[in-house]
Image 1 (spheres, rainbow, N blue to C red):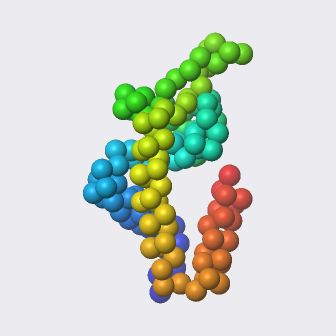
Image 2 (image 1 turned 45 degrees about the horizontal axis):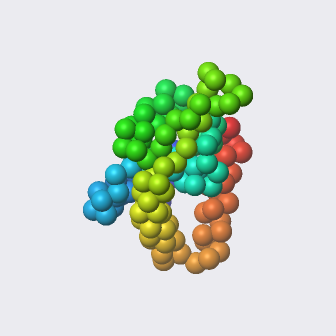
Length: 139
């Protein structure tokens, strides 16, 4: 059994990202997995500052700006001026973005079920605990 955990995690992350890209393309979903996270956060609470989205997704400022720029061109989000700080914009989801998020969510649910397939509930619980520990260990 391979115990090179960093290597295995890296491969798993790449494999999962590529799987999602293929599934999205097949289903006509036009956002990337990273953009999907932005849409999901905006559906939970709309009109968030870009730096908050980046912090929540662990994406640096330049990368989040590029993602939001592309999503704005596709009319999935829009920038709104912030009333209390005109230097900063809030990112809001559009109706088109809500529809895209719903399409992406179907793929995400299907993929999540595929990840759990073949494992006992206790194994899923342990796996979830291990993954959650990363957020504490590697802040």
